[in-house]
Length: 313
Image (cartoon, rainbow, N blue to C red; front, side):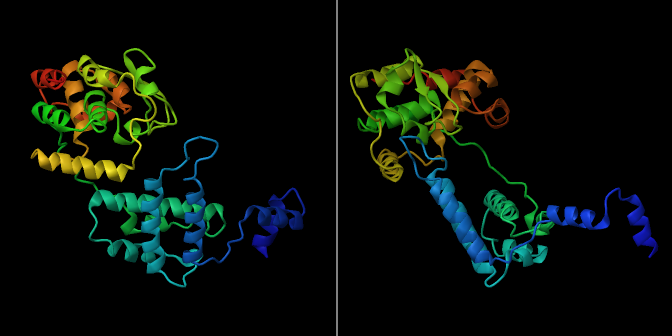
């Protein structure tokens, strides 16, 4: 009784009005199975992969398919379980079953689960104060990224000399301009030659969705010059087709695999040549912090001069 009278004394509105106001701010959690919630979430994201009115899709296919796969694992771990019944122990169990993944992949998986749970809050499938992310299994791990591997000047020369006419400009733009593969494959020849001395990467074609102009160095200009009269898209086939062709090319000339090695090489050599992380970041569409931390001290200025001197024989 004392607590009741104390609470009543603090109110400046009738008790019934205070209760009604409180209840109006409290979400009513809906009991929805994890499997049903995952399907709804995935279906909504799939809609974002569709382009409309000639505009680039909001979500790339790769960024859709990988979370779809991971959330498929998640729902199969908890059959006939409502989202609101999940506990920290459930998440620990799920992450314990992913021991085959590297630390970096596990962190991406954790981020996907977090994204899904936040969506569940918005849908009133989960209380906002659920505390599931405090589970031990959801703590980020320090990922060992390993050494940055990149191609050397003689390897770039061999790749460009041996490439066919369709692949050669894609390789040159990655290695001598730092343009991402997916960006290069979205370009048209108008993007390449429309602005003197620069490749124009529009917001719809940039990975970061922000426009940038990439300087065409003399070596790149020499490789692109034979294509000046070309029109349309630089690459008209799928990304998988390019990857398969690049592997075939690389193995035919006995050059080792270096993951993202062309772009890594550009960032490494450009930074070594200019010593300016802001300049390199502006070219590559990256952050100065990443350039400084990932590419500093990997090559000498002499190495860089050789890289940017790779021209058609």
